[in-house]
Image (cartoon, rainbow, N blue to C red; front, top):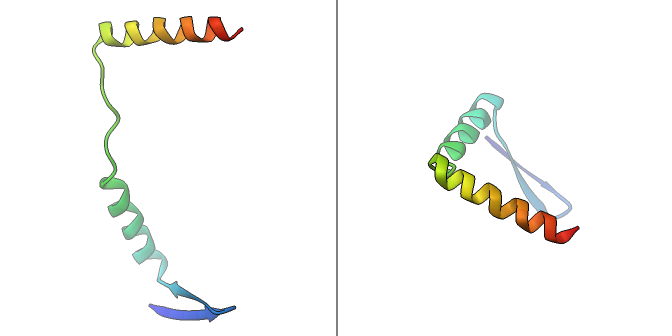
Length: 56
């Protein structure tokens, strides 16, 4: 790992493999998408359809 200074800003240079591991680690910490039951999904879909219909 090396540090570069360009226009008074510090940048860190890391090897590609190390960067990919950091990206994977960060992605694993993100919250998973919320899962819905079929009835909840249907209710949300109808709600969104009504909202979009009112906009037009």
